Length: 161
Image (tube, rainbow, N blue to C red; front, side, top):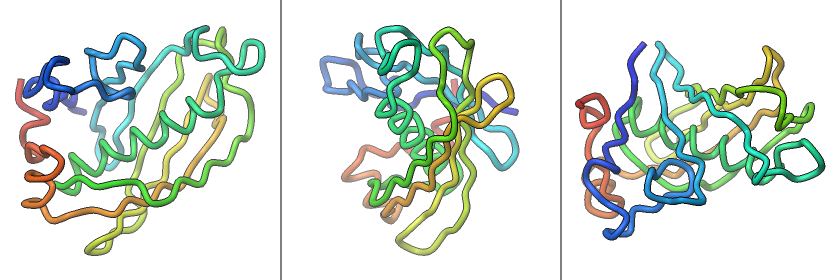
């Protein structure tokens, strides 16, 4: 098990424009996610907050989709040594994620990899139950293009303090 360092936060500050809603520590409205690599998976633990509520005491479905999309990107960054853009996000909501239900765990695992497309299986669990899941497909770039176009720092940067 290894903590993943947010290399983007080390390289860029809020004034540089790094304000990712999912992972930037500089976005006061953001989710401030942090990530861990554990074997073949990447996961994040996060506490639902009332300000992200949809129906009473339920985490908004759009926020759930954002969490699943964000974790998919991070497994691509650390396991595939590249970056890319989401092309498909197919979410299946199974049970509510409760705001007062305690911490949730967001999990990603690579499902299929081709030269230009990567499919990631993700889910959110709360109290040991899967609440929603998604298959996320990313169009990925060569490492060189990811570095030039998306400021990708290379996989090693995510494990250096």
